[in-house]
Image (cartoon, rainbow, N blue to C red):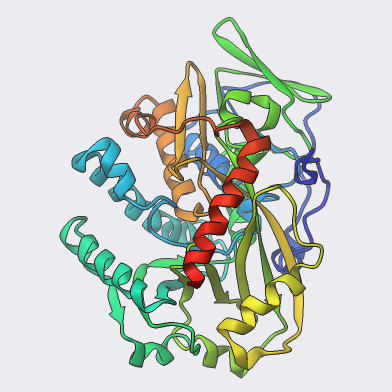
Length: 431
């Protein structure tokens, strides 16, 4: 068993947990039997967005979380809210056609606005800042930036992207590594754990009940209703939402077979003071367009938060700061020898084609497959599932037409196969 799947009463030792210590209140585990309209399994972004919308609509909602609110990827990620899915839009358009894909693109843009609106409406203190810079490391990949700028404008009606030529880059990111950039003002970045905790509190104020340390062990149909068992409790519900993503495990084997757990990791430097603004004068978050990318941004206390790398066999480097230092110093050689105060990792839920996997079977709904690009797409998922549960399944039916087959060879073989494939793409990035 991957250690990540073992229930834990505490948060991983990340910068996010350390800087949220005053907000990490415990919620009681489920005891006894509960009757509710909707049971949501997983108190991360997708589960909380769904629960919040349903509670706001007057539904009785119970959330079961195996660990703590935001314990998984929702509370550990890079904090970059970037428009789009991991697969980008062409594969979605190829499967669904122009009009249906355009409707999904509009959902993404509306979700980006919803995140900003919820931060303001619920008073969530999560260090929200605007802007994302997508950069090219290789000269031949500058064309990916200009191609997307043209496609976004001409094909998707999004005309706000700004191309940043190499001679302008020092005003955005002080690194010799990049050839050009593309700035997106509708993207943003935030402290993900503070944000997910804020969503949980908003859901509770709307009437939802959250139980931590309450892993769902099994579920079964009981007439028209569903029964969900935990170790010492039971939930009877009309509708079940599976939002556990990579931690779904044996709770639903069919859904689980569509997901490969991929490890990824981050570090946080010591506070940089005035040097921080020299590194990223614009304050935007940054990613590159290598196949295995680097991503980074500044924290509110002027640290560089730097992520990248991946593992496909469920493990993590023994010393994450040591493993990440070469990549960080390759991007910012002026930080050579900088102290790294925090290093942490976690699992993301990758589908075979990197397309999102949202669906319904009877009165069981699910959302998974964010493939490392989930801050905005999870907001889309919450809207799509909640609307379907409330009676409008227009958007959900669109997503259900996307093909997400089981991983070839199951999880035991899919990891090595994926690792072999990624080695090839890493070599292409280098040569």
